[in-house]
Length: 308
Image (cartoon, rainbow, N blue to C red; front, side, top):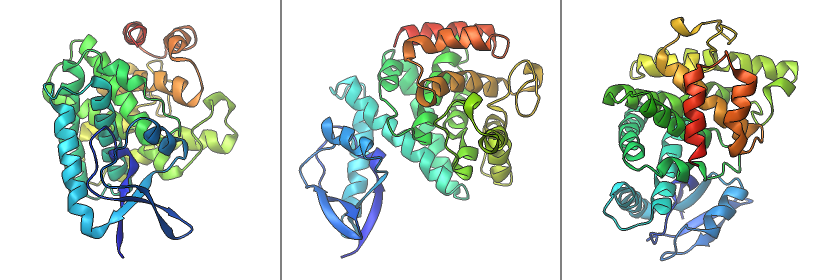
């Protein structure tokens, strides 16, 4: 029998699957979930704890899987679906995470990029029109320290921050979200261990970290389907307003959307990769990084985190 891989992040929610899902163990396909079951609750938690990124389905059932994805996302984005917000958030977060991984793994694909870009626009509308969505997304623990999950979290915080800053232009917020989603492409390329404090990195890792924004941007700069704003965000998302970032850019020389992503990224780096409790992250940023991020950003992110 022939199998095709599917991303675990796309298998979310309480919708029953109409295909069988397998995991691969020592080149053997083991049936994990039967047709008629769903990927909710403990099942999803166990998959994340196993750090399992892909499962397998029969190639003959690929169309059934595509139909499942379409129905799941349609339900999740429908405010009148009757589903609880947490279920909807899990589905949408998983789809965004998958979109990020698709572009990371194949940035040459214009189709993948355009799909992620279109989805970014829908995601902005969802977050901005559902006040509790940010809290729900932030409560989805990134247990396996996944870069794409981190990208979704940073994009969510960036949308919330932009909204508080009064940035509502559809094109700007779409590109902000897409850039935030893809900002750590350089880390994906290097494969370095990002789950450590920057201050504690050894010299080799510190160099990889220092270079990851420019390395990531360099790899997509020749891709004509990439928007310049997205490339700017990838290249400049570690630039600090005092000029102490990797490129030495001050705030006036940095893309304003990249500065928003930088502030959002700083919060989630503390939470996801440095183990700082969500309740303390904004305070720690205020105490230790004042002068490196716009004070207004830190204050507004502190307000956002209080609601989580």
